[in-house]
Image (cartoon, rainbow, N blue to C red):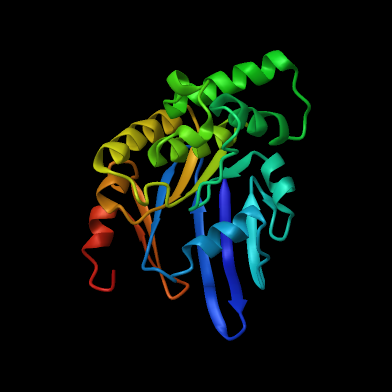
Length: 230
């Protein structure tokens, strides 16, 4: 599904992503770990068009998408979340999700199609019971799941998550793990940056490790975590 080849991104003299290559197959759930400043978010930004690589290729279903604008990447059925949630606080949860359904794809949808996609996204994210609440009244954990639901409303084939568990309580982490299991089981391929490793390892069968912009590990979580450099 996704092939990254010899990807580079520099900021002045700093190599944020340096010669990174990897593949993600259809239906995989891949974790990305590494210390702060390792280049994890920059990698997601490059894939989703928020930054342009200095060199390398990003192939999605055989098409090179490196350098495409974010809205064009989104319309290829690639969605993402961000570290800092930014819901429309005055709008209801359902209205927030409707934004993703209406504006997250190339084709214009009928009202019935929008309602169907919103209901599906809310159910997968575990938010159906708070659909009528103002988004500003949600807990942080619920807002994280709202970010998920808004992305899911565009029916992505590939979902990229950037530290969705940061700042959550143990209970909120458990709720989010269950939501992510449902999302993956629905057929969505997932790439997830995360520092909460005990939760990440409940979800992924494979981990990619970055350090100082370079890939230093890629494989089974238990094998990867036993490597001295990791």
